[in-house]
Image (spheres, rainbow, N blue to C red):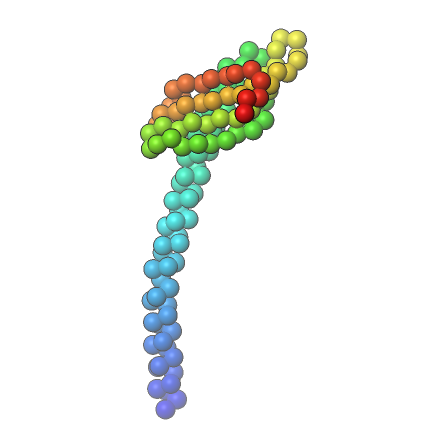
Length: 115
């Protein structure tokens, strides 16, 4: 009888495990998609920050960044930056980057913190 009990427990454990496997696979897939999205946003943000730096005459310091997805092909990243003028003084700016497929299409800088 003891052998039968062990078999029953083993079958029940197998049944529980077989129910958990799709959940584990699903959670892993969702985690993978989240990681891919994070890497994608990091690339977009990095390219945008590079463009803000390149737009500055002397130096730029990114203060904040907000991300907003418009649709599958176009992304808008906005935030605040400080740009340094030729005399070493810093001015506040609001930046907006519009990107298509990881390529920067437009970079807008507006003096002052708008919003």
